[in-house]
Length: 358
Image (cartoon, rainbow, N blue to C red; front, top):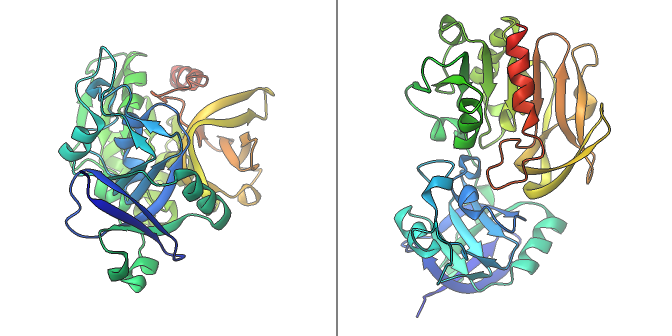
């Protein structure tokens, strides 16, 4: 029988459930967020953008197609903990190589199931993202520690420490700045005949430019984008180089900061595979995969430098920018989304065209 566990939120709410996955030897503290994807739980659990967070799945049954390593976005899980309503103990899929419970044990991620995830999600939607702790004893929780928790040094914690090359000697040379990259970003570039050199987040601009890249990719990643001043300063120099730049998610936000715009923390963020983003140029609305807690402040965008290219249909926040001062563009959503939808993969083709006319 599974041990009893509790989720204690900083607003005082307590949810009782059962343990699965990695053993909880001491209280697990993190920022509680929810994601709305019906599928893609493996991509979620291996997405480094969840660093420091306790992930809640809103879809009630998770784990029904097992564990498929080929679909992982990283070789680690950066999540603090994982919360589901129910987990499937007997998955059915010809590609499956294990169960969700075993995956969580192997990757050191504690799990909690059997709580009312609908009530938890409604609480976050109404009150905003808040800290939480998974514990065996809710009466022993240090409330000061709970309320003061902050995710810090996020990019430095997940970025590679040494550069490496994927698909050498391909047609296009792409420098990928790793802020917590998803593996499918590299796959999409490799599929388009790109040699991809992955650089640590703090690599100086002169070292990146020394490889004479045809294009620069700015990846997704965790944490508050405004805390990364060294990264922002390096990016300013990359923007001035005239090399085409494509930013995704956190890369979109940091590129905006490098151009003097502002970012803000959203009430509960956008996480899931069903976020509508409207193309403000072409007029189409695309369903996109997203995972972010911050957004570029639309009012801070200097129209002499860039214009908004996409906007979130639900809340009107900025979903994309096209720059006038450099061959650069960026989107808040994930066009590489391995868990789907893949409506916006054409943006990688746009990046290739930018490199061809450089």
